[in-house]
Length: 92
Image (cartoon, rainbow, N blue to C red; front, side):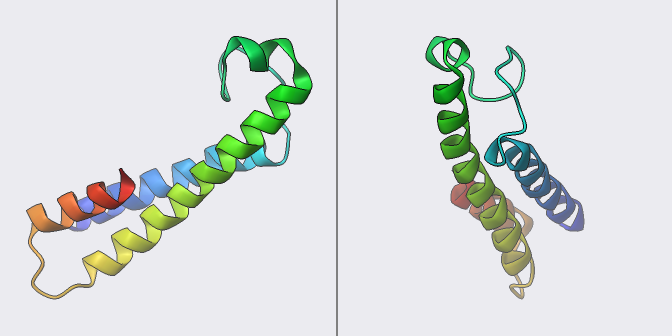
């Protein structure tokens, strides 16, 4: 189960690291990284607003993932299936 904890922590940290540059407006419109649809790629103002909104939610998901993974890992007697499904349920 420790491997699952590390995996969930890694996903949470990765989500946070992906979100931070978008929140701070450090990513210019591009076809690879960010919330990429025609409207955001054609207008920089829309790009930064939409990506900030998207990244704030992604940051929240990452933090909740970290907290949930650690708290549920500390529940005595929780099985691997219950742990993995519970963290997945919170993530979804």
